[in-house]
Length: 358
Image (cartoon, rainbow, N blue to C red; front, side):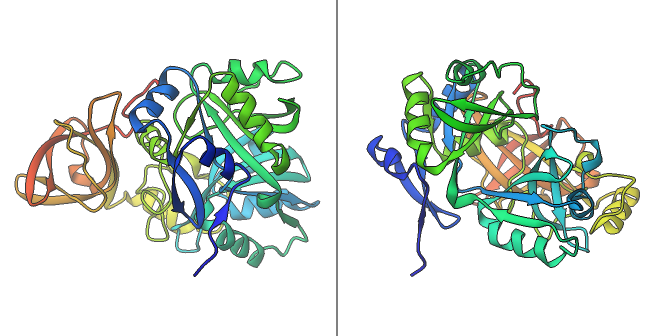
């Protein structure tokens, strides 16, 4: 039996009565008060997620920028100290190793956050291309990561900080003391809402979590996080990204440089030029029926695509999904059907950003 890992906040989740499930090898809270309540807490106030299962790494060396330019799809050269960017790691054939966030600390020091299920794979893949004498350190088990999200999130985190961090720009990060703990506070997230993702020492995690809880932040689990990221149009590795999916198909050309050479750049740019055979779109159901992964998307009795992720949206009060459909059928605001238990249910092809303001 494989060992199930526990985050530094595991006992806090148990004490709060969270329903725990295994996810990517970790024992994680899937929900507390319920998916709808937690989703609305984030959209209307502030919610927090234990995302300590995500991989956290340091890169240090005189040639670190050169290495990261080779490995990542986005333009590392555009980052200033304290800045971050969403990016991808790709194989030579242009499909995805993982999607990541890269943080520039200085011209010789960077941080990277990677997906929990890909941590060991990503690190091995990066090291296999590291001929640049760059030091890579995995700090996942020495730290915890708490995502505080929602319209009230920045104000609450700022109230617990030893300095004013409220003016930190989006996709930037600062060092601060929060609830008595040293913290790397990044103004990023995975919900479509404003907020901070806080990396703190593992032995300070309970202290920071408790201070946030006392400040009125709702604890939230993986289920509501999935709802929120679909509403906001954000992909999940293994669903909208994988070693079978080119970023152009997934609508992520905006994080792929058109000018630099990186691993996988040629097949990605070739698909960009020729146009992808399929595209990722949003699907909005006409009812509360939830379109699940693998369900067929139909039009006039013909299969045109397949659902990659589906949830019930509490804010829209209907089922929503991402689906890969034939490019010729990807025009927005067109009717379609989703086949659920061999019955076709009406829906529409829409923008992946179901909540544009999120």
